[in-house]
Amino acid sequence: MSEEVPTPGDTRMKRLRNYTWFSLVSLGYLAVIPALQAALDDDLDAAAKVALIASAAAAVVQRVRFINTVLREREPPRGPTAEHMTTFAVAVATWGYGVTVQADPLWWCFLPGIVAGGVVLNTAPGRRIWTTLVLAVGTSVACPVAAQWRQSELEPRITAVLAGLSATFVVVLVLLDVAQVWFWDMVVELDRSRTMAEELAVARERLRFAADLHDIQGHHLQAIMLKGELTERLIGRDDDAAKAQAAELTELARTALTDTRRVVHGYRGTTLHNEITNAVEILSAAGIDTEVHGESHTVPPPLQSLFGALVREGTTNILRHSQATRCRLTLESDGTTVHVRLVNDGVTPQDSRPGSGIESLRERFTALGGDVYARVVGAGDDTTFELGGHAPTRR
Image (tube, rainbow, N blue to C red; front, side, top):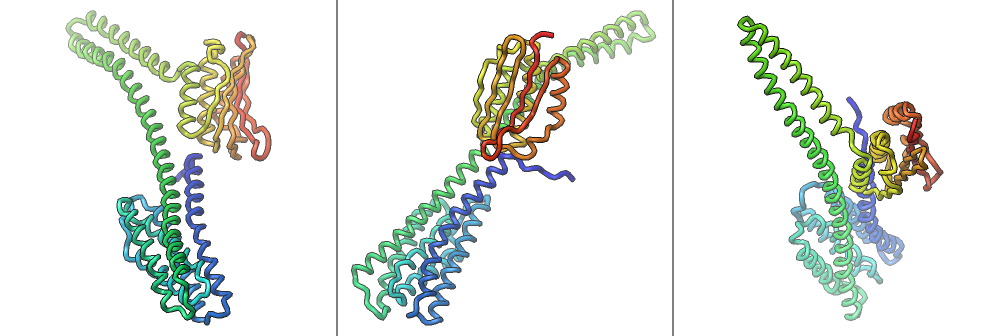
């Protein structure tokens, strides 16, 4: 069984997904600060420290779980579920407990916001605003309620500030999380649309070719069938007429073969201008910025298909074997020799090993007195891959 090789597009999507995941999960570091504060607080007994640190760790773990669910599930979220609300309730209770037992409970007001982002991401889009408001209000109410059980009384002004900050952090962290996931969803949708556009372009070309082939062969095959039936009837009755029909049958078959070859040649043998246009469109659809320097009409007609094959092979290699973001196509002619080369970044180790396509191109160029080269240029971040060919305008 052959192993499926990931395409550069798949690799880019995986990297973007990992970046999105890391960006969302990294906000959990806000729970580390109050946990460390509690661990270093000499005024807290061991039970209080364990309860606070365990709650902070549980909040981070649950946030990671909720985010994984959002990024991996294909169906839209339908929450919040009982698990989501229970987790948030524990985070709010921990925030309230921090207000009760800690002299400076400011850092604990981040904890509900850390969990709230994961809860809202797992909520149906139409209910996210109301869910966010409910979570923010519940978080703000926890502060003045918990302040009543403090050993040292908090000033009403400080209590109001803490309540407002805790609600604000819930809203801000939710907005940050939703914005990150929205960006991820848009990129996934754009990538899906690009893939569909490429598939549709291939399907349209296949349909065009099938229609041309049907129009050509359908007429000839019907005529061949009728001639064949007529020949069968004439055999034994009028052998001379049968021979004449058989000769026409042979000529019809020969004409059908010639017309079919013309259709295939027209399908494969496009102009250099069309090959360059198709290459730019395909590379642009793959997110690769492509520049073209030079004019295709400077290439003599006998060399158009040859250099068109070079452009087609280079485009295929860029899409299959690189992670390119930029490509430059250059056409040069000094009146005696034509040079065409493609240069792209995003070089991978496979680029340094010419494949069978490049070897086949080299044979075709050599037959016309030219040559093809493929090489890696530069080092580090400036490394590029160059595929070029040259051929004389006259031999």
